[in-house]
Amino acid sequence: MGLAALLTAGALCCMSVAARAETTITVVGSSTGAVTGALSGGTNVAGTQNDIGYTGATVVHSKKCLRTQTTACNTDADCPLSDPSNPSSAKEPCTDSPTSTNIAAGKEGFFSFLKTLGCKPPDCACTPGTDCTAIRAIIVSLNVEPPTTIANGPLYTCQFNNPGTTAIPLRNSNTKASDPTGNAIAASAVTGGLPCEGCFCPVGTRSCGPTCECLDDCSGDGEVFGNEVTKAVTIVAGADLSVCPPADANCDGDVLGNEVTIGVNNVANGCPQ
Image (cartoon, helix red, strand yellow):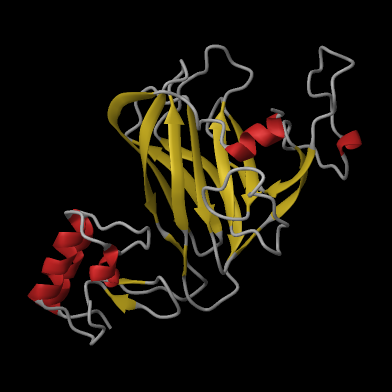
């Protein structure tokens, strides 16, 4: 499998799982369009991968040589050899990929467009600006043996655009991590939204659609009652999110204890206006 196909498929997909303290990859957008992936709780993490869904937004992208990333290109012929020590090796692929900055120290970042979150080739093929709905970010060391570990903190930044007047929910999924020997490390996902200039939903609400919604307001009547918080608690315990969709504060498909706490505040203080 070539490097381009490997990266689209997910370089960390097939490693054996080793038990570790919880590792989390968080994706958060800013009103400037910068979307940052960050690592927390990581112990001995040498590589990461995650997909970001961005329906409703656009992603800044350009044609670059796959490996060097900073080399602009139009075709493969514009790129250096994939193996500089071998004059007969093929050229690096020229790929249209998301623009990225602030890659974790000592690492290389590889970014590709996806037709759908979590897809596998050949089902990932898409045209940026047309039918792509997600990107895949892989942070690894290809030239360092053994690979160095990644410090907790920013992994990368990509530039998105929110053309609308309300925040756009991002979807962070397919999160993976590995240690320097290739063992997989279980990695959870935390996701924020992509704000727009001047349109922020107040604390205690969420923006997973065109309007701000009061957290834990299961009935949509503008108030939160104890029975609605109880529904949120059942989702934390394993019930389906359909029991009360507004319990999901960050639009990532899960409900955690801190999100229930926000709902409790809305019972006590009323829904933010």
